[in-house]
Length: 136
Image (cartoon, rainbow, N blue to C red; front, side, top):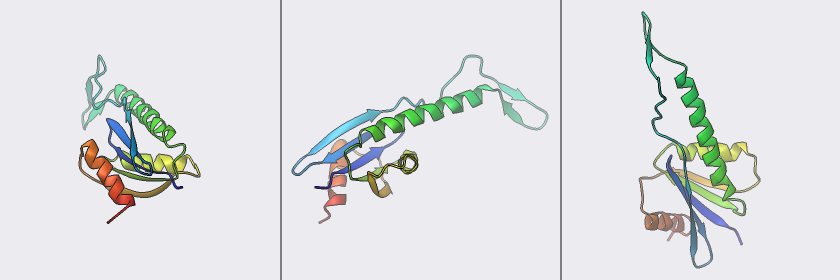
C-alpha cells in the first residue's frame, strides 16, 4: 500500500496530513522562525551615496537561515515512512521544502506536486489532500 501525505506549510507551521485507508492522521510542526528580529544596538549607517546596515543584518540573516533549516529538517523527519507527498500553502516555504527534499537525496517521498493555495482551516486542508489523491 502506498503511503500518501499532504503538507500545508508556511513560515509559522506545517500541517502534515497522512492518509490512511479510511481515516487521516494530522501532525503539526511549529516553526521558530521570527518575522522581524530586533537586535539591541541595531542602527543604520549612513554613507554619502546610500544607506548601509551594520553587521547585525548579516547576523540576522544567518540566524534566520539556521531557523529555516531546523524547521525543514523537523518537517522531513515526520515523512520517514511516506511514499508520496503533495506540498501546498500560501507562502514560498513550500518551494524551500521542495528544494530541501530534493537536496537531501532521499529515495522517498516522491513529490507529486507543489501548489499555491490560500490559508485554510484544518478541515479544508484534509479535504484538499483527499481530493488531490482521490479526485471525483
